Image (cartoon, rainbow, N blue to C red; front, side, top):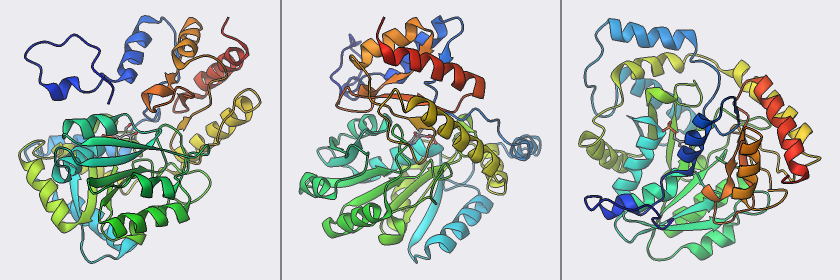
Length: 377
Ligand SMILES: Cc1ncc(COP(=O)(O)O)c(C=O)c1O
């Protein structure tokens, strides 16, 4: 979506030049240059993988469970996920497969359903991977703005749908806004997708990170919704690359065919660890994140215009002055790292901070942000 700004090597295909390299990665490069940064730019939990899950991983390696698995995942993990999904949704044609992270599931879903020129609707602000993956599959990005409270305007979605619309991607709780969509909006979106015969992909990677109300999905309202989720955030195992997708069996079949010739399977020992993860409660970690959210919102609200996030582990305040770039530079001058909102949005009006950091780091970050709100100097 962002025009290429880098000088391309002649061997590089157009698809690799169609999107800018992630601004988040630029932040990581900058972070490396700072001696002692207060880093609020990171999108992964700061809690460690629970011991029982680590042990399951090392046990699997020691027991030589290191080879390829079946394309769709190890049977005990599939069975466990399938029975959970059946108990939650009770839909007869809903099947699950294990993927290489939620990103893997997203990639397979778009490769399976988007032909070149097809339109994919997602919401502004968006998760950075959505436009990149749509571009890579030859699709056309159709970002639809959200309301000032980051909810979805169903009329705007209906107006954005054309004969070429193939997929709508929804993400609740949302990265970067932390917004949880109202149940009536999720229902409306699910019904709208059914009425227009387009696939609704629901990215539920933050489903465990909900602070005020239970997590809600559009899947109960439309049995054709493709749900993707993963172990990365919920059990702090971002580097282990295990996710899952469930939806209509024909779509899962098509995704599995593509997985067979791309990712092959999710890492074998990590799938055994994922099985242990499903038995490992994370409520204490979630409660700790809720406390951090509350503390950060209480401290920052007098100085910033903030929609309180109901989930995920991000806060997405409005910029108090200047552009995202100017604000980010002033933050870096104070050794503070945040992410400018124009990475997630067509507008340059907000910035993202992560609360998935040690309490002392969050407290230092809050102090710096309060100072920064006053003026650029
Ligand atoms: C909204 C959203 N979806 C998907 C992912 C990808 O997660 P993973 O591939 O680690 O499961 C992320 C990671 O930041 C995310 O924020």
